[in-house]
Image (tube, rainbow, N blue to C red):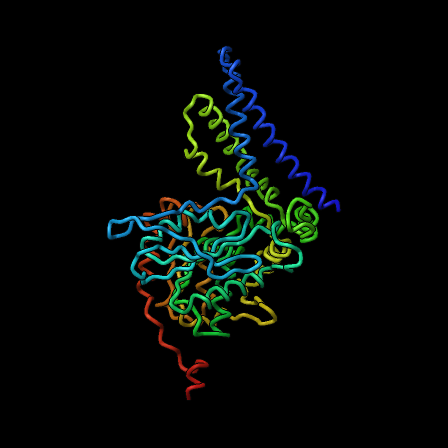
Length: 425
């Protein structure tokens, strides 16, 4: 119960700060105070507005905000977001562009489940919609999932990806961003052994920790020096009574956000101070750069305890993917069985989360894949966010990925001895 108490305590602190912001904004907005030409009054209202908005965003799931796009025919086409596969811990969504001719490129974006919602890839989706038929994994907030739904660890995550790939078929091009890169590689290898006709055409891995020890960072160093017992004691709590997942063990989003902010506390503090001053001077707007960024950054979700702990233990500490020793549902996955799926890795030279060297390790694991099916790219001067959503993605990486997809869109010839050929014989 003490873990449930600490979960509710964090929510109480968040709720209190939101209330304080709303109260300060309301009090400083009394008409009578307009007769007092003191900057403290406008500053108080500005502080209240920024504080209320910030703490309110922490429990809100952002909307996609993608309503239409302009296609090559010069017309605006409505974008409908439909659920293709619905599961307890995550759905497969489709961005259906109404009235558009069928698109040759079918892309599955595998969104990270590392504290933020899939909407973190909103700009990535938008950049691909004109040229691709886009699908995305939409992971659910663990606090909203009843305990009766069971567990969800990295093996379950991998099997979800297997099901999504099977649903979309073999003409799919998969792009995995950050955290899910090693598990997406494992899911592809799983299909290569269990259901080779369901394999995707291409697999693009962007900034993912395939081998965390290839280039150590602050993230990998933390995972190495902290024991699993310490992590479970300090990070895991039980969902409080306010949410449907009451009693479920989770790594709370608010606790994750604290860690995110602590890594660059000076920069975040300055950003909020500057925003308060802009609001007090009447220079801010609802969709200015600060609000666009922090509306997404502050919106965090809980992860199931078993997913978080198994990620740290099996991906970072034991390096099961890097050693090709990953087991899914009792089956040892052999990444060397990937022989037909073209694989490309993308890394950022200034990535301080998944540093250069961690993601390209996937190519060495694909021992059964010919060199002509392998590709890699190191984007100069790009950080972690920039390689999938920033200027580097838009100007350099996206065109390169589309070219890679086009070059490998034709079905790959089956190698001799595949199960299908053996059966036919």
